[in-house]
Image 1: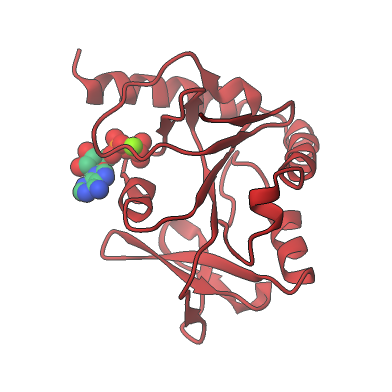
Image 2 (image 1 turned 90 degrees about the horizontal axis):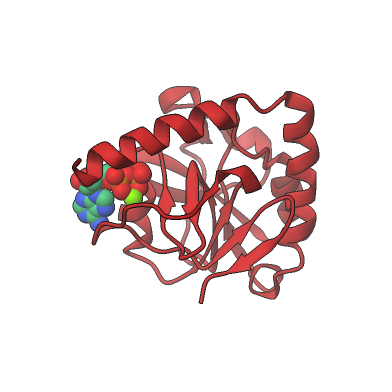
Length: 186
Ligand code: ADP
Ligand code: MG
C-alpha cells in the first residue's frame, strides 16, 4: 500500500471517530485543552499566536481566540490564497467573513502577520513522535516549512495513534495538547 493510500485510510477512520464526538463532549474537551495549553510556557510567552477558526468536529478554539485578544496579544488567522495559508492580524472577531470551505477568514482590511511565535494547528491525527495528519492537502506542511515557530497540535486524545506514515514534506510538531495531557515531542 502506498503512503498516500495508508494516510487516506487513517484519515477517514480518524475523521469518522472525531465526527462521532458529541457536541457536549467536544465543548468539555475544548475547555480542558484550553486550560492545558495555558500550562505551556512557550505558548504563554508568545505574543504573536496563529490560531484557526474551527470547522466540523475540530477542537473549538473560540475561548482561546478571545483569551488571546483579551491579553492584548496578536491573534493571527489564515486565509487560503492560491492553495497557501497566509496569516493576518485579527483585532476582533468581527474582522472575519466567510471564505473558502465556509471557513471564517480575515477581511481584506486586516494586516498581514509579520511575526509568528506560535502556531495552534488543527489536527486529524497525530503520533507521539510528532507526525501529524491533516485533511490531505498539505496546507500546514507548506506553511510550517517556511517559518520558525512553536508548533502545537490541538487534538482529542483519541486522535493520537501509535504511528503515522511520515513523508519528507511532513513537518513535525513540537507539542500535542489534548483534554488529558500535554505531550512534548523530543
Ligand atoms: P496532510 O499533511 O494535509 O495530511 P499530506 O502530508 O499527505 O497531507 O500532504 C498532501 C500533499 O501536499 C503532498 O502530497 C504534497 O504534494 C503537498 N505538500 C506538502 N508539503 C509540501 C511542501 N513543503 N511543498 C510542496 N508540496 C507540499
Ligand atoms: Mg502532512
